[in-house]
Amino acid sequence: MSPVPWAVEAETLVLGLLPLAGARAAAGGLLVALAFYVIATVVNLRRMWRIARRLDRVPSLEAGPP
Image 1 (cartoon, rainbow, N blue to C red):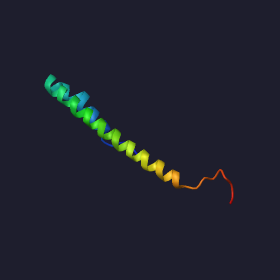
Image 2: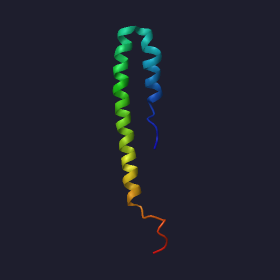
Image 3: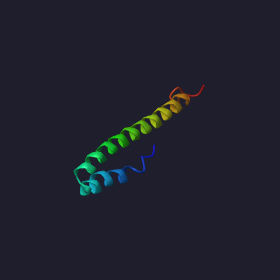
Image 4: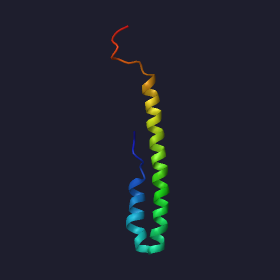
């Protein structure tokens, strides 16, 4: 699995730059960050689900030769 590539940029924006713009911008940025992390979590769960399905289809090597 590859990490979500834009996570560092989102954290820099929300935690570093938006507080400099004021409290209202910081509060709005936190809501945007929350939405971002929900979407990133859904994307990662979907990736894990697809990997697990593919691994379930692979024949097991523990059973030995047929």
